[in-house]
Length: 136
Image (tube, rainbow, N blue to C red; front, side, top):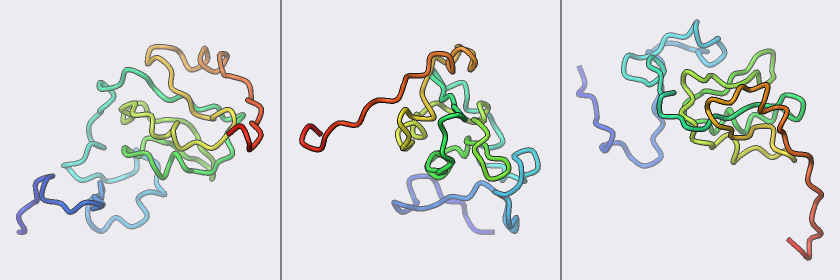
C-alpha cells in the first residue's frame, strides 16, 4: 500500500477527492447517497467552526453555480439543475460563496449563525443602482 501524504507534502494547486476510489458520478448523487473516503471532512461536521452562515435567496439566484464551484466544502446543495440551499452540516461559514456571487443584490449573504433563514430573507437588501463608469 502507498504511504499517504501529509497535507504539507502536496503540491500547490493539488485537488483532493473526498470520495472512495471508483465512485464515478458521485457529485450527481445526493449527499446521503455518496460514498465518502474515511479521511474527508464530508464524513464529519465542520459546522461548529461557523460564526456566520450563508443564506440563499432563490428569488434572486440566477443559478450560475459560481458558489457551487468555489465552495471548499461542497456545501452548496443542488436539485433539478438549480441551487437548492446550503448544507449547514458541512458549511464552515467561510463566505467564499458570497464573494463569488455575481447578482445584485447577491443571492447569498452572510448572517449570524443563529438567525433563522426566514428572518434573514426578510432583511435582504434592495438592488443597488449601477455606478457610471467614470465613478467606478
